[in-house]
Image (cartoon, rainbow, N blue to C red):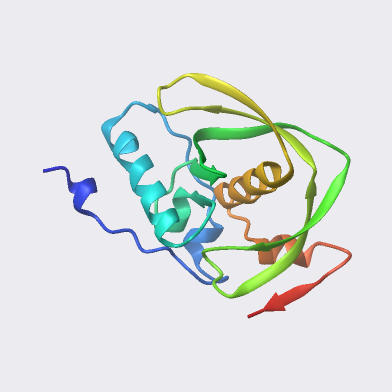
Length: 163
């Protein structure tokens, strides 16, 4: 039996968690069995937590992988990189599965273009707007060890909410 299939992945939490602040390693082979097994597990963990995005470091995996599901559309992003971002900004109240109960008004680019490898090993390019753009910027921040509370500290206009 596959060890990954039996493994439960708790979501790592806390602004001071060193794993969440680490820069993550590129995936060498997207078709490797561990990567292929990890993708559906990440989706499962994200859904159980009522999230729309999850990055591998949030479950303790030091890999440049994230999954996003918005309006029933699921995408797996392996080694994603933002290649362009619009100058137009939007302010959006963001939460994070790793910072439960905390919400920050974060300024993001309204549109981004992301290059990545999908679960089949194919190179992809996605131009995203609105919620997709916000979520991708949020998840790619995780892959660089940046949490929304870190990004918030560097903003000029700050609004924080707690539930």
